[in-house]
Image (cartoon, rainbow, N blue to C red; front, top):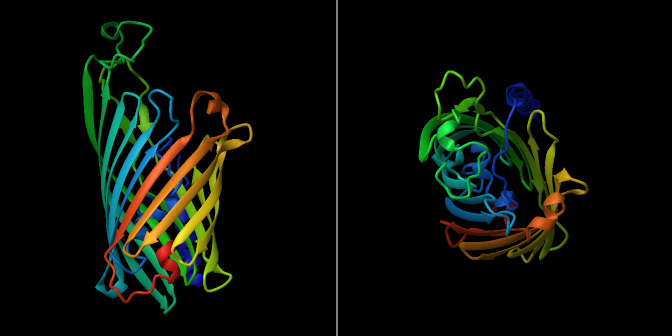
Length: 316
């Protein structure tokens, strides 16, 4: 166990880097492949997860995210493989991501899995200055920082992550995008400052605590660190009923005043299918300008009929 925490501490200095805002998900505990390449294959079976998020309903140009992930164990559980396709739109920006992740499970003991993961990322993004909602102080033709019409760029990136689970407990740390890519569509020498895509650091932890054969609670937390910005954190507490139905409530720090949001989530496992929904009630200053945020999720497990769904990893 000392070796595990030593490796995590060695990763930490590489992770604390400057960053800008990335997409967020209330149901992150069903979508950890999107954040941490070390997670792939940890549930012991192949699965596909699709997730849709519409943030700040009624707020024009607000973020919309669509994600589909696949992950599977390999080599008898000694490794994991995962892939992710996602689209994120914010106003006139449209971002597409594709990632391929691989991790290796460092043998510790039978009930302990500790994985170190790497991923490659290809990002294609566009910005449409011809959108009729764009308002500028000067006409676009007179602004050296803008170009009329739609512009696009393709960028490459890499990510790292570590993920540890011990029976009914897990902890992970990751930086899914490490490179400091510049985001600019204009090579005019007059322009001296451009937007830069910088890394985020994510820390996650959770557990499944049984109280009886048919009821357990599942606390979980996601910490998001961005340099020069307040620390963000999602804190969730869910009840698991009969190892099939899950209902929970969460609190998201950030924003202004009393926090970013209070979130509610439901999930039900139909044998190989899992379906989840979530609703965020906004607490920040944007409360008067939107009707909250919604998410919908569906997951399919390629599991064998004899596999026991009471295994805590099925609900991580």
